[in-house]
Amino acid sequence: MTISQLAPERALRRLELTVVRRLEGYLHGEHLGLLPGPGTELAEAREYQVGDDVRRMDWAVTARTTVPHVRDLIADRELETWALVDLSASMDFGTSQLEKRELAVAAVATVGFLTHRLGDRFGGLMLRDSALRRWPARSGRLALYGLLRALLAEQDHGEHQARSDLASALESMARTQRKRGLRVIVSDFLTPEDGEVDSRLEPSWERAMRKLTAQHQVLAVEIVDPRELELPNIGVVLIGDPETGAVRELDTRKRRVREEYAAAALAQRERTRVALRRVGAGHLVLRTDRDWVADTVRFVLAYRRVAPRLHQPPKGVAR
Image 1 (tube, helix red, strand yellow):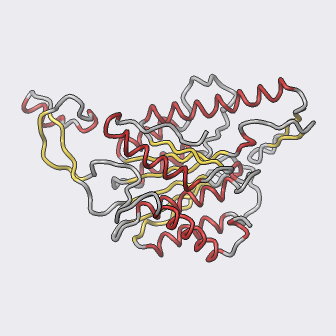
Image 2 (cartoon, one colour):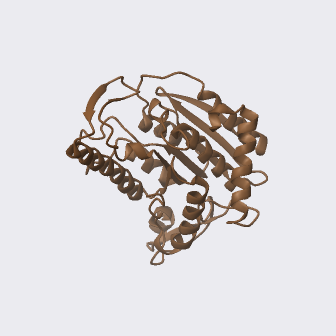
Image 3 (cartoon, one colour):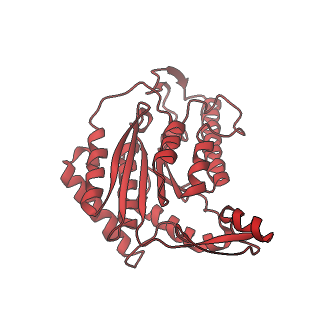
């Protein structure tokens, strides 16, 4: 039985038990920070040293003293986390243990339980049909449950044909949620230009994502289904785009067709990975046919280990 087939309260209880019990065997501590970081409150300025983040350069002090200075940050006692969840029609798909939409809800729940601490606030933005629904940031576990219930309720709607604009949603998030903190983007990152333009060009959402990473810690959770990566040999099939209604016939008996499909899928994933690395966002890949709790834990442990040295997030753990 999948998450969407359960009553909302039962689904939330199952999610919490799955996440919390499994995490206890991997991670310990009162506040399980998902992404390590220095904090958000400004502290004293000091002279620049090799290896300092140039984004923390204090240009006012530098201009007065003619010596490069950076502004240190101190950790906030409270963390404000906002999750932008892609609920577009392309997420209504799944051929394995979960649908992509169900895995997106599970990802938000995992992040919420990982970052929860007394006083922390968690809010959400739900993207559907290019419309953003805002769930205000509140503290406490009940507030997180409220957001998860809203996400589960969205699954009851029928198919939608309009394209969801991830770039505009990211722009809105950067413009309206100004307090620094953690920003989590949960999406399959499939865009209309995928497969139609040079894969070396930046995705339409990259510039907006860069604005977020300039002000916040950003974690991008990419949701993937195995059938989006390769086609089985099952004869002639009709493949439809749920957001536009476009249908294309493919003969999967032909090896060349399967190879071209797999190559295009690999190029799209690589394009997403490179873009997220360019903007400095953490990149977690979750697949509907894998253990998403274990993959999340591996990502957290790997990021904590390499982030202090590399200042860059590791590659997605699911392959």
